[in-house]
Image (cartoon, rainbow, N blue to C red; front, side, top):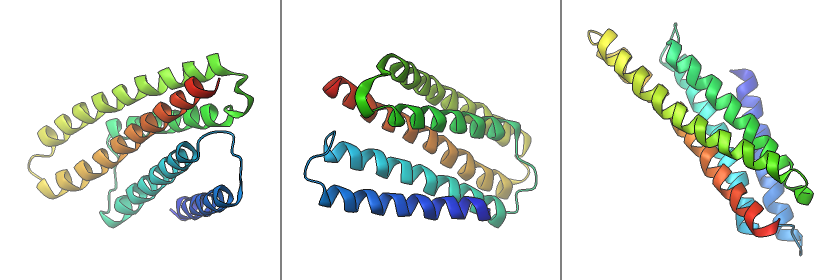
Amino acid sequence: MQRIVEQEHECDSIVHMTVDLLHKTFIVPVDRDEILSMISGLDDIMDSIESVAQRMILFEIEAIPPHLLEMARVLHEAMNKVAFAIRNLRGFKRVAEQRLALKEIRKMESEGDRLLRVGLGELFHERAADPLTVMKLKEIYETVENSIDQCEDIANIVEGVILEYS
């Protein structure tokens, strides 16, 4: 939890630094709104990850359901693909690889949706006698799935930048 909190604070610092630089820089490589949307989206994902970690502790979740673990893996992969796509915007030298990464993010978003449906189905079926646990885990499942959706949102912004500037 401590490491996640540290990373969330680091992310906030990067967002503030980026916004300050946008205000000070006359010419930027891509549209300011696109930069702001990307950085804000990344910050939103980090906020969601911190929220999930806090809820896991607050709700005293002792065992993580397998589908939730799989969703976390999908989110991790999607974040890596987002990072790759953004890192390689400079110079537009790896557009084909970026577009492949963006396509994979879209597949991961669909996989996140599927895992949410299956996970919630199992949760409601297997833990029907424990509605409090169902409510806690449902909230966590939905937050992780929303983070995966946010990766796709950022991928759409990156795709627009690639189309416009490459």
